[in-house]
Image 1 (tube, rainbow, N blue to C red):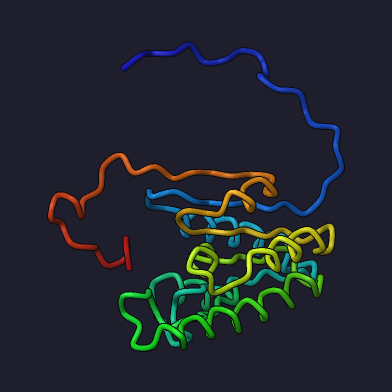
Image 2 (image 1 turned 120 degrees about the horizontal axis):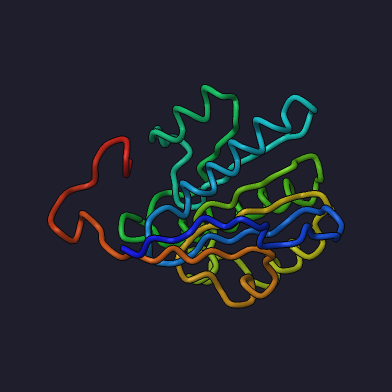
Length: 193
């Protein structure tokens, strides 16, 4: 390990630009994309709900009846989280139905984004609907461009299309360096529900 000297001077100047809604993307093959998005949603909710601003999380691959750890916690806080899908494609009994659920879910999310009542809208695992061709990329791009100026949108999922990355303000790629699953350790409840 390399020991560093703590900085003694500020390493950046404060930006002078206008405050506005951001497009934030968490992508890549590493873990933590959704977890980071939920953390942002919790931060936004804690800051804004007292002032009448809303935060909403849509999960494009989770079923509406999902009861994972994030659902239980966020529901206790009063932060709405809604499953729009029927699980991952390898679990689907009817891929055409899965595609229709994604398209219907996108229509709901699009209306929420364009409605302007929400400070932040999280589109968890949206990228799968895009890369499978279930959700039209052009419609997503147009919605992101035309959203009210103070609406933040957070998008998660692997292999995010380059067009979304190009439009986004902040993009983080999660990279897997090491994962317990690869060593034969199963998912742990409360860590990877």
